[in-house]
Length: 174
Image 1 (cartoon, rainbow, N blue to C red):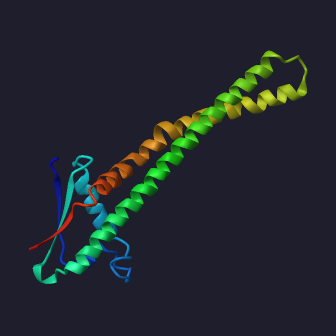
Image 2 (image 1 turned 30 degrees about the horizontal axis):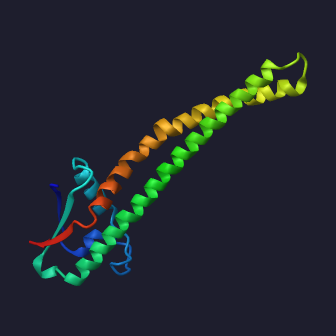
Image 3 (image 1 turned 90 degrees about the horizontal axis):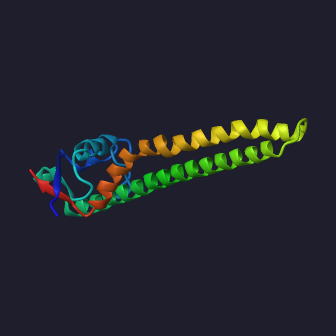
């Protein structure tokens, strides 16, 4: 399998992390700019085989920091891939549930109408209640399945690529 390289040049390790987070590297939040730069660079890369190469000045390198940072990056990508995947599954599940409930409501309204006697107030109320509810559930559920779930795909794709490549994070000197 051929790997595709994402190469980033940093002045120091702190460029990877948020300026506002003073915790040790093992716990610090990643910089939004750093993650966005990786995201932009990964757009034209395939689903697997990404090699993240981070160049740091030779005199600023520390092997112990690099091991910690690699673990932190891998943990970040794994965590966020799991979160986005969970969100996608939840959205799809809600969509399916709403569509099924909409269809059931339509079937109930149809049964009520087919066996209804004129002037039965309860049956009329149920039909008036079920018909709009069924259409709402059907359309909103379809929207979740067809459109909302697709909006999650770019984020899921990015974190999926980076999670699959979490072992391919390397530091270099310049």
